[in-house]
Every structure is written in C-alpha cells, then in structure tokens.
Image 1 (cartoon, helix red, strand yellow):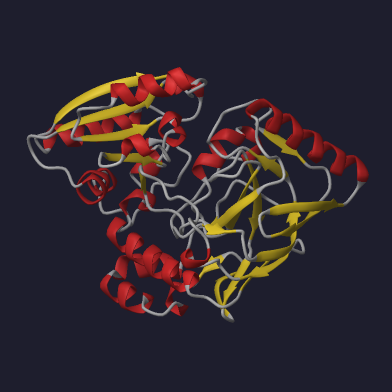
Image 2 (cartoon, rainbow, N blue to C red):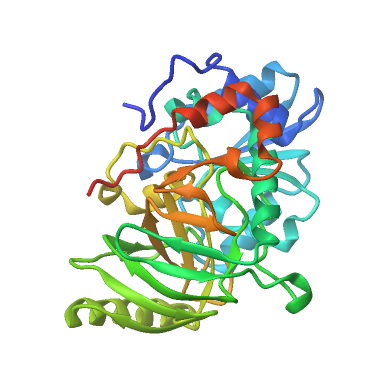
Length: 370
C-alpha cells in the first residue's frame, strides 16, 4: 500500500510528475535528465515514483538516464563520487536519500537538481505532488519575508514549549542559516530561522531523530518522558526532567558529537512545514529515517536543528501542533498554517484557488499519535 492517500482531487496521475519536471526543474525537450534512485529493498523509496518520472520525462522529449545509488553516503569519498557522477546533465532528480546528504554542497551551485520528498508512487500521484509548486514557493517567500522582518516571534506547543525572540538580521551577523542548493519537491518548509536572538524552553517529547545529514545508528532516541531544553541563542544551556531521561539524552548527544567531531550543545535554527497536502500515515516508529524525510512538510510539525553549528545539524527536535505567533499574528495555530493571515499571501491564494482549497481542509497525518 502506498504511504499516502491517492486523492480523487489530484488532477491526474501525471500531474505530480509534470509539476516536478515543468515547474520545479523547468525542463525542455532535447535536454538530458538523470534520475537517481535507491533500491526499494531499503524500505525508504519505492521504485514506482522514479520510474513514473522517467517515463513522463521521456514523453516530453528528454534524454533520460537512470542511476541507482546506495541508501546513504558514508564517507567523503562516497560524496565526491556521487558529485562526479551527476555532473554534465542538464537536470538531476533524486529519489534517494543521498540527495538530501549533498543538499548544502556548494559544488552544486548552478546545477538544476531536485530532491523528491514524494517517497512512493502514491505520494507522487496525490495532491502532495500535484499541488501548485509555484504557488507554494510564492507562499514560502511571503512567509519568509514576514518572519525576517518580525520584531518578536513566539513559539509554543501543547507540551509546554515557550520560545521567543526575533531573527538576527543579516546586517547584525556575517551570515544566517544556509539554504539548500538542491531544490525541494514539493516545496515543504520555510527558510530556517536562526536560533540567535531567541531563548526559552523547548519540550522534547516522543523521540529525538536524525536530520538526514548523516545516517547513523541508533537514528532515533525514544523518550519515555518529556524533558525541557533550556536554550539561549545558539546554546543548549540545560535539560530539565526525569534524571534517567536527561542522562539518556546527554549520552546520545555526546555519542553523535564524538562520532563526527561536533559541538553537541549548538542549537542552529528551526522551521515549520507549509504543505497542506502532506499526509504521512505510516507510524514514525516503524521507520524513523523514512519519517524524518517524509513527514516534516506538514504544518503540524516544527523542528529544530541541533548538534552541530550548521543546518540541519545531526539531531532534530520535533514540536507537534505548535503555535507560531509573528508580531502577535498566529501564522501557525495549533499546527494549522493560516497563510491568509500573512501580509501579501491572500493575493497568492487568490491566484491559486486549488491551493487555497487545500489549506481550507489540510491533511493531518504525520505518523504520530498522542
């Protein structure tokens, strides 16, 4: 069974693949396309999604090549080999975790590369992929601009998080969080918001998980009780909660930090999902790696990048059904994104009535049940 509903409202089985090819990659007949996949035996991607995009691309007159890679890049040599393999193509699309691992690489500047978060054919043929890519990008840019100029942002959640501040402006600091050089498909999240300028208490609940930057074991740390992280700017100052759970969290951080020579207590940034048709129905605990790459675009999820002074870090915190108030306006309220409350966004929604309809009845599946 596919991991996503196949919506009756999706325009057709071709709508998602064509959004990827025409709107995200902007392909033209006669160009070359490399479709990079990984074996379905790894349990993360199926092979149907990549096959469908390759077929649609051939129908558009592209010269299509297929490449299968390992489920993850383990060494610098692996990464260099992949970067060399994808050179020379007009366009590249990843249906493989390796694409996530190179998404911040400066070596990719100028290349037309997309990373698909439609993990299976069901997701590719649903409203998740068929929703207006250009409309979602416009909304993301509008929300990003609103956040960037905010005087105060407050993040709260039902588990007791209370985290507030204002983004550090580019003029105040040499550089903010880096953005990816690989295009996301679909568009799922706002730009990372730097943790500098924020402080408060963040509830760590359910589990800690990796970020897709590296694939290590154990990839997740289930938590038997909630713990609060006390944070100031880019630092995790303290953990409050049951001693045994705090000890487990500290040990997990030290373990991952020592493996990769990182600052364990660095809090880099955070951001939330924006896609109203993101619908992940498989339980997170069934495959934490797949969950972390398939569910994060739902507005019910807000996540933090920690353990490392770069995005996305190596350990993420997940807030479910958070409220994000930007200068007093609840842009996300109890896990629901209200783009109509953002200055400039109503005009985008007016141009994109099908997208507006998805926001009116957003999907709720995130693989987590309380």
